Image 1 (tube, chains in turn orange, green):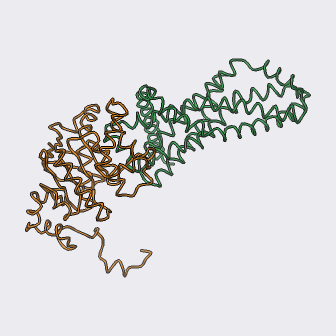
Image 2 (cartoon, one colour; image 1 turned 90 degrees about the horizontal axis):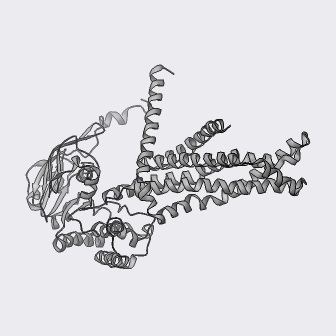
Length: 264
Length: 254
């Protein structure tokens, strides 16, 4: 379904990916983990054709994303869904119109049919009663659920989630987790979940990839990753500050900087 | 300024100009699809046009009244205060109405277009559209550009009418010029050429203001500071360009 081969990508002089390889099988839930700033969101941007890799191949549905002309890229995107971290709802329309937006843009359907479709999807995320609210009136978790309804309204074949668990209360988190699983089992949607919440991902993912230092450091089932002996993988899975993955941003010696004069 | 810096500056300006023109071509390519959705377009004409009405009408009234006072004072020195009607009408129609409307438009509607599109960029709304396979140029930019382009001549026409009424208010009601003389002078001196000059100016200014506003918004740095800077650039660039274009067009028409 999705194949990334030997991808190199640098941004602002920093090499983010140094030969990234990963495969997402049809109908699976694939977790992509890694520390913040490790390029997880960038990977989604590569998959959706927003940016182009410096080297290597990114294939979605067997098509080379970077080589697609604009029209073909837009056709490909209609088969994809992406859930943004902040929801990215259109602020000048209410919840109903937000969910209806892709349908109105791409399908020539009667308004009564659109209404049924939108209510169906809103019911799936438990927000049918909020259809009349404006995005500004929603909490963060609700906005993300509306965005999820919008992402699935066109019945995509692949659904990507960008940090879907960040900043959610335990109830919303449980709901989103269940929804991701449901989308996968009930609708057969291939899911790619980008996150650094190890525990949550372990409960739903069929396969996990851990990106460390621009490469896949580990791949396999969540259990396999948990039992890994590699120091970097173990550090990430157990949340240690010390290890091969640097927690501190590179800086000069702590003591000498503290003792130095301010006007230096 | 060293040669290197100067050539860099010239080069940067040319690159910028090129990017604006390319952006215009891309928008023009999306104008037909945008025209096919009258509801979106109407909303933008309302936002840029109807919402600017109060400021345009108020300014028009005062500009007309000042024109009445100054014109009367000047013309009286030559004993030809009867010509106030034609002086006010020609001044408004050919110069003041298009220019001041455009300047006010840049400040009122241009800034709101830039900050709206810039904030949509900053909150990932434009990216979300791209991912949903909806071209933001077609859905967001083209209707706003066309809305501004259509609103500007309409606002200019309203400015003209209110401005002339302002001049009439001062000249006739306050200074006592004969009403019939005021209007017959106006009618006699204004011909289609003058109307055309004002109309062409307002269309050109509308194009320039709308283009700068949507370009700056679309390319704004997606941060609070970036959107603020883009909004400022919209006002500064629009104002300078309006006055520059005004000179060029006036020279062309005379």
